[in-house]
Length: 338
Image (cartoon, rainbow, N blue to C red; front, side):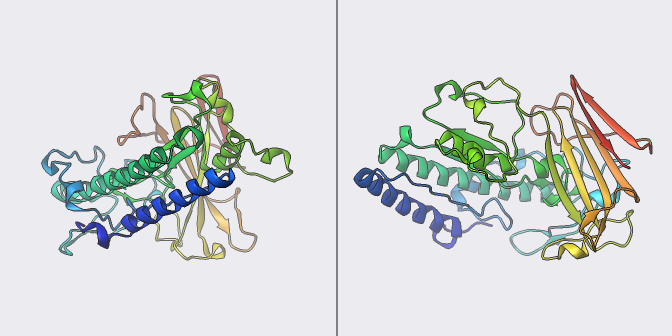
């Protein structure tokens, strides 16, 4: 919705971040003490909030809509969940489902609000980087920008996140390490997961956490800043639970605030350069482990040629066999359903 700067939490957070950054810069100059500053903007999380100038950046009539507006043929219903109400700023609500999309003009209205919110965050980030420059610390500061999840805006008839679909799972990740010139302006095809951020940034900062005996889930991929073309990882993993169900062939309810001993199933996902494979298995509510020898649902999505976080997928109907193999060049992923 359109709101003035002063009424939006992110604007207040931006100002507080600038205040803290100036304090940290002064302290660094006076004591040489390094600093760590983390800011988490709420936008573009729904409900989207941005001032009118952000909405004015986009012509709503020219905003595209999803190519695949409903759940793909053959995709299991467990892959889909109604996790967000679609409504206009005046409160009007529009129903949608796995086989029913909202009208295109409503989708454009919602996307307009989302785009405005994204641009608003971009403005906040720019203000922070400008302050870093003004404090003459740009060349001494590692900067990391990332999101915690993706978002669907009508693709597969789905709105928001909370799924194993590619658009919900993939996130932007940008890191500037000013002491690593080989990385300047470069992108990497090597897969990176958010759990890799801590060991990677620590390594870039000269903090040897991997040698301190910590049990870390992530990998240090700082080699990419010296060799951007290197492939350190060619797959990434994700999981999301299913709640509010009694059988597989229904859509999921929300899992917010649901304890893990009440999950119905767990959805596991692996992404390789050209494929995404999702597997849903029953969840043992007593042992809190997946039931590998029980009933299951699976999805395989073809991402050959994807260069832009694809919104149009080809769902492949899989044979009910015990081994699924996806070959990507020399990489072979096998998921055994015991």
